[in-house]
Amino acid sequence: MSRSIRPSRFWETLVVVIVKPLSWLLVKKDWRRGDRIPRTGGVIIVANHLSWTDPVLLSHYLYNNGRWPVVLAKATIFKVPILGHAVRSLCAIPVHRASSEASQSLEASEQRLRDGAAVLFYPEGTCTRDPDLWPMAGKTGAARLALRSGVRVIPVAHWGSQELLPYGAKKPRLFPRKTFRVQVGPPVDLSKYDGMPLEGEVLREATADIMAAITAQLAELRGEKAPSARPPGN
Image 1 (cartoon, rainbow, N blue to C red):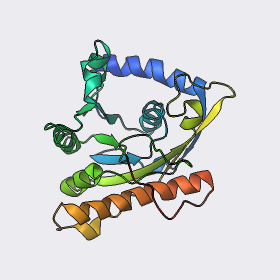
Image 2: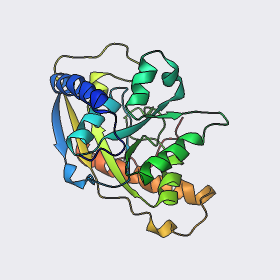
Image 3: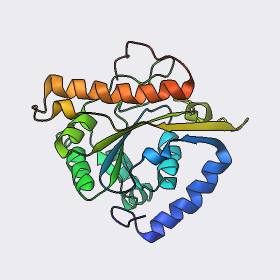
Image 4: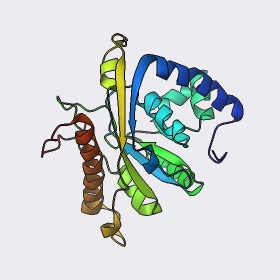
């Protein structure tokens, strides 16, 4: 893999040595269509959000398919001693919510994309609150970034992390061993928005297209029909 937008060899080796064995130990893998992950160039990876274990398990999947994921994390994490240094060293981008600095994460993400990074977005902004765990309506940040940068948007759906650590739970459910399923869809076609102003209805419709692409992959992964109405995001 290219060394562009990656942590130092020390930090990458440290994380890989810890995370990969732990991931293989905790969950069985049902990984599908990794060939749809572009191996080079800037790309936005958009995924559903079920559990706080998602970023680790999904990052393992992306890493095994040739990409170092640049993750967006709450800015408060960067202020925690030791953890903050580690997260920063792993190329994560701080997200400043509900503040005058909120746009900085998108600007940093756009620069990373220009440098050839794979930026991992959870458009919902938080773990889904839908009672059946279908994706909620997304926030417009990923769509804005995609339309502004012109890079590909790859929808990824996953299922099973909520069984390992349900949202709100403090302890993982280790037994019986859970299966983490992942499926990647084709790039989201946002070409109809080319040349349109990046505001209001355009961003909302582009975001709806992105969420629909994620949901379609999740429905296939779950072997169920997704609901026609999408619950509002938090």
